[in-house]
Length: 418
Image 1 (cartoon, helix red, strand yellow):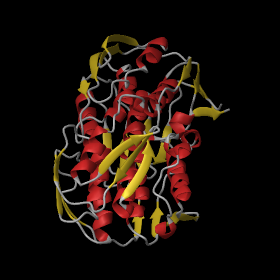
Image 2: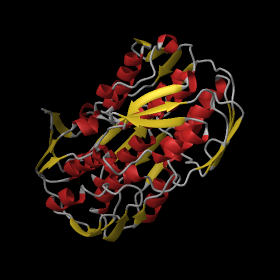
Image 3: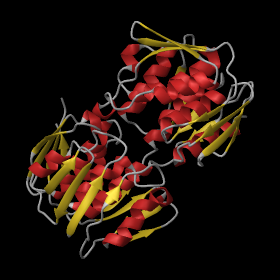
Image 4: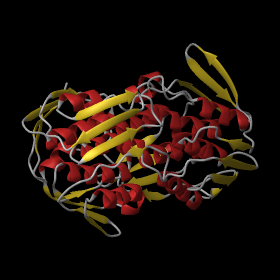
């Protein structure tokens, strides 16, 4: 098993570019199933979850051509509607294949999606199943698999009892080929949803309101396929910005969209972390002093749950006490004990809330990455800490951050992969 070795407490400096968005690419790839024509995707991040998604496409029968700067997916030869558990059990994003397969073939068989520990037990798929039923599908469970059937999907009105990005995207894709009009209410509003809808509309879909809480989809008989460049990863943008603040470094983040992390930049103004922004760059400057600021995670455009762990690391270097309140995932705070081991002053109230007092000096430790976002937080903590930090199970970090060690070395980090 690979791990990172970090010699911390070194100032970082220079430029680091943002790769294509993981959460955008993981929806565009299965969306290709809705058409029988070839899609060309550029700016695709080279990360583990994308590799698994493409492997799953190949297993279904799609032909994939990989070039230096783009890939082409030809879905015309997809010859089955059953997701192979060998692939589907490995990552939660496999659930995004269900809607397009159901829409195209009228049938789909799949196991309960797998993924990291954050997805284990705490992220049920009820919203997906209820949505498919509302569109006319029937569901059977047998031998550990779900079996969905629909002779003809029909538009409906569906209200999400819980805001969910993936459920919103899944139902939106499924309804594209349904007969009649579908209205989805209480939808998630993340930029990735609008990005997906914009692509589908260019190919003949009729989607209105993506990026708002109500989405209207008029079903069409078929859609085409075209070219798409994956939008910048806003969570990578936020991670790098928080890393700059935590390591007291001046870093310019390029190829990004600062408007997608407006909540983070607003907080930077409150805590005294100076920055400069443009349309496609963000420069984080050194702060004379950081002030603590409490946060509560919320669906977009609120504070992203995925950036809560890196933000907690930043708060160890701020003056005062900050409450970290996680409202979305039960297991998101499991990294807190590791921060405490490194010297952070942390008081855990319950599984959802923790107080962090600062500023405190962090010290290198041997750590294990429990999930993707906790992993990047531990990496940032290691860069901030004195001495050596070892991080095991870095596969979790590789799931979302392309060649992160090489990119960090380019801005002065002392990090190696062994």
